[in-house]
Length: 217
Ligand code: SF4
Ligand code: SF4
Image 1 (cartoon, rainbow, N blue to C red):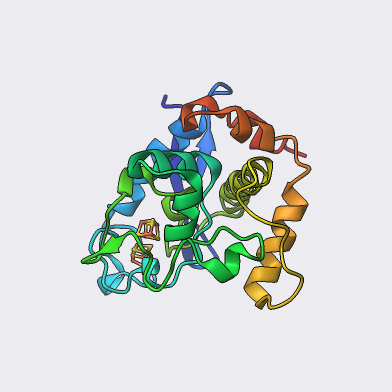
Image 2 (image 1 turned 135 degrees about the vertical axis):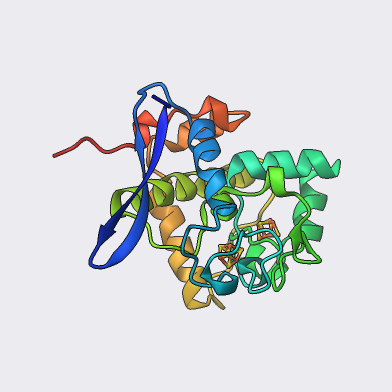
């Protein structure tokens, strides 16, 4: 049996996708490898995909046009290394300045700075928020799991940026409702012990899944 099982079940007339973790030593890399084929699965119902059954690659109603992408710390470090520039230059040239001033490391959007001819030019390095997003219905536990992992990784990026003096103290005004929601999420996750796994990791293989999985009641 594989470490991670992707499965589907019908609930209230809607087919939902979820994952089960069968190996307590499974890592985030294992989860991402199990998840990736869903992006290319034409049998998966995708709300915004062409005819609801297209692969994500080349999608013309691409979520990359509008996404509010804040990279997790692994992606943040890998993208910077790929570009071969300093963190300061990376933030200056690839992030939205008015969001950075408010402590939110949002990549330049509409469309995303890395989208060219409907294709992500850094696909193997893209952020967790990009890897996990699928315009399909998910099973609740799975949705919560990927949400927790993603926001833990994003919070680690904020803490890393603070520790390395890459962002100034955030301005107090001019926040949109999304900015406020994301700021509050980062503050909520800041004290989660799982953040340390991202702070200490070089790759997704270094991050265990077990601490993110809630025990059954
Ligand atoms: S997840 Fe994004 S890229 Fe994939 S089909 Fe939906 S809108 Fe298109
Ligand atoms: S990094 Fe790539 S996958 Fe993520 S929003 Fe940008 S173009 Fe899309």
